[in-house]
Image 1 (tube, helix red, strand yellow):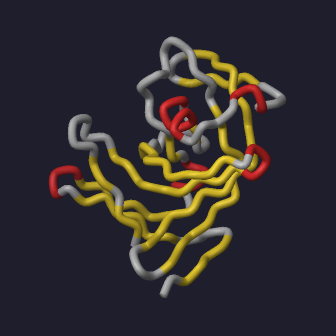
Image 2 (cartoon, rainbow, N blue to C red):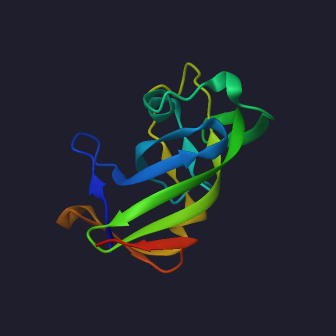
Length: 145
């Protein structure tokens, strides 16, 4: 079972993951906001900056439409890993959506979308402070200790 958390000030649901973008040689921990309305998992500037992502290396921009309207985005193959405490690490190979900075998205967290969430069963209960994910499928699994 993966354990998420609710933000101290926002109450938003989060799950910690480890992101690796091979072509850009970018790796690090990301606190993903769980977003059942997002088709895919997205890296936003707050986390991209922490990971020291070099936006000048991004290629092949495309357009997408989100809640804020149309946006220019980049897509990169990535691996996201989630750890079940002292048991397993689950790896997912995804097409990550990278959203470059603009005047509107500076404080928006990175999003964990349905390309991963649809592979789990979620127990979401802010009143009891429980955010649990039962992994149903994964691309790779690594046993721990």
